[in-house]
Image (tube, rainbow, N blue to C red):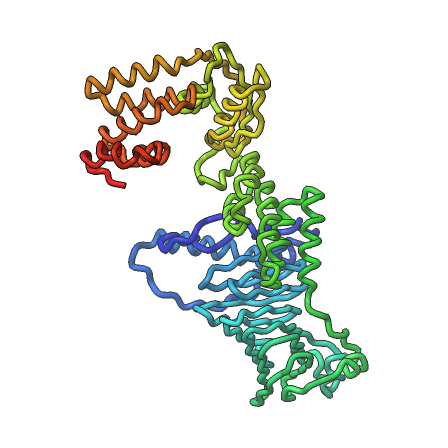
Length: 491
């Protein structure tokens, strides 16, 4: 998908969604006949930045016109501002930003959006419209037969011509072929219908019909049946779309499932939930639609993103970082990661001396999921396993399985305390603090707390000084704290 860019002539046009169905045997004749029809001229402003861009725009518009002639199946996307046309050879979803339409086979229309105003010329066929409360939709139905205005509404517009329509509207059969009957069914919202100079407000639950020679008239289902017209079609079942998308996902129809989920979101904003976006994200990942995957990933539950990101990582899409994803973790990358945690692993040794082998698996998201050690039990093995689990690795498509052996030597707390005291006499207070802290990790003992506090004060390490101040005997804190006070640290 091409991202929006003010300097990109393809901005906002989702060419991936415009996939024509298999060609019919009469495709060639249909295309030739359509090409012979007169094409209206379109006024455009000259772009002073050069002619090459206009050649590209012309090519894109030509391609869009051919696709519209052949019929578009699935989801039709539109930029925020723009224009286009659709001739639906199959049931289709037309996405026009905040508003959308479900097109039945045979629907033929053009549209143009400018800000929140959306103008549509629905020449023939049936379309069920869902109009955002922020949008103003104006439909010119059946050439100039009727004009429909809607805001925050759900409605169905039918443009047809037949003998049943003539009987319904009181038009003679002789002129039935020239009659375009426009029927507007309102499910909810604010809708106005204008025809033959008269305008009526149509309340939800009502149906209005307009013909060239008659003003808008409210009709009942019984009148439609007497005239031979089909009964009113209820609004689409948006919840059923979610169920259908799940079924398509289970069947491996990933791209189709993605279109179905997005149609459901456009059909009913109440379905635009984190759980449904997770389903759409799964479909986008498996369909390898990177743009859709990242769009839906941003709407998934934040606390589950690291886990579900693995779905896309297996398909070469990094939803977390947005960078190209390598196939697997190299040994050098793993070595670098382990080197950063070796000091923490050394601190696990306590009085243990010997080798500990750790095997661990890294998920595509870079999370350590399994750690086994040999020996398999004991505080040292548990400590090493915990340190490894806390390390994050780069995201890859397959993750990896690694084995490392750590040679540990037993620590001597007394020797470490003596080393720290020597360093303090040399004025190496920061190094002395390190030695005292290693002694405390080797053998937690009050003997090392006081020198650790003194080293922290003299090296002006305020966070460490405050930690060890709280561990000093309460009756000695005031006198000992003067060491820190002289170095600008007060309590």
